[in-house]
Image 1 (tube, rainbow, N blue to C red):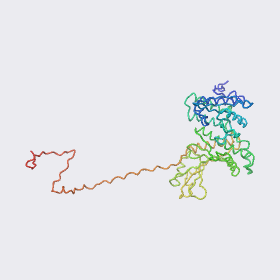
Image 2 (cartoon, rainbow, N blue to C red):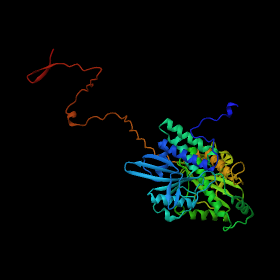
Image 3 (tube, rainbow, N blue to C red):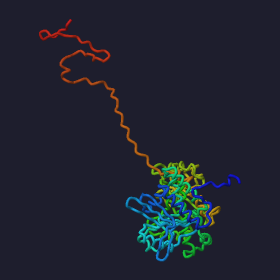
Image 4 (cartoon, rainbow, N blue to C red):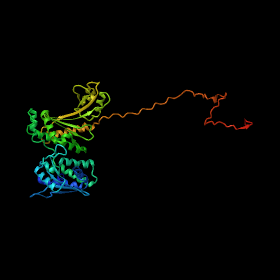
Length: 472
């Protein structure tokens, strides 16, 4: 057998996974073991949930009795520091398996009886926003026990950011974390990425094209929820690449009541035939807006950028064009003038490069802001691969950020400069003659003042009868 077909020995092997149960058990054991082995990674996942920065202990398939039933949560995490102990039960699903409400409620009852702090669920389900849970449970069971959720995409993103960007102090621990990353990225691990827009995607898209979509249609709410999950997945994936936390933009009201966000998406889908959202990227000049037009089958990424506060209109356009050296010619730029009636002036970047004046409708009005938009085809398939909606969104976001957004800087005013002090005028007039009375008591011969180069000779004198006479 050729050497290329040999399997390299791995700390966490993917070979030998025979079914869903083995897949789930191995993923749980690998993750919990690495939590204890790599301190930075363990703290990165547990501290946001309320755990202290202490020693982490993990266990798998711990047995508990609940009434006449014997239950086995997939794992347990315990963190100790001084006199404080934080404990969480863990329930894991891999592949396409989804969390079951009845099972979660049983584990919440166990956690309450044992005075544990929370229940952590891990699956491939991606909630619409961070902090939300993809499975609805009886809220009365959450009075004393918290319920948290991590998607496998989020776990992988945390692992990559910790190793590649934040760093791991111990080289051996860094290698262990890299083995977990390699395992989770393998298809056999069951830690899948977001790979399905749902069974309702194609019927809803067809209804939009036919102009027959109604708010009460089956699947509309599911498509809206899947779109928000897609935004969350895009933010995790881009954040994993950039080494920073990227989150979808939602209002405070929508964060407190997710139903408001869902209602807004459904309304936009039915009335405007569009789904839209935005991502907040640290230190970027503006949020990245993503819009899917289901009728035209197009996806648009855009940002709104403030124009400089000084300079002529053409100067402000040139300020923007200089930052778009790597941007594609098809980038559409819209310029908005202050106090202007009507719409904006719009043109493609290739034309603006040749003549900045194409964005200036009235030279007397100052430009207030720009919109930079890039449009591409939206895939039609519900899954992953060529011609799929998910892949077209991922490609559009990567292109826009890589070629446009990451090169943009916000305009800043030039600091005021200090005034240079005026030089005193040189006085070329002759010195004034003294007008003191002592200088006019008699006529005296002018005597040249001595200089350092020619010292004056001193002539001794002797006093005689009050009359001074020269000596010698």
